[in-house]
Length: 109
Image: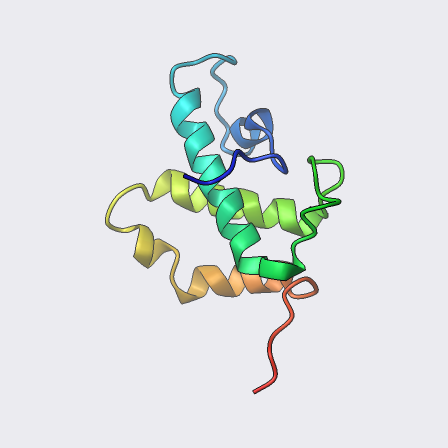
């Protein structure tokens, strides 16, 4: 299970997804799990380039990183079943690459 998300809050996730149900809604648990997975995915993608010491909340995290988390959250929220792999294929990762290019250093072959 991924670590709890700290760079995007549940309230921000609900706003991003246009979910207007109040805090404490039974669906919040599932949404928090999806948010945790999305943030974990992006931090794993960045590997050592993720500043896990200084990025401790939505204010300290760079905008492109939180945007990538929200983009991933949206994909994971919409595609919850077998189609998730297709939805997060090369076109999706190309969008993530554009957002995170300055953080994600590629290796030299």
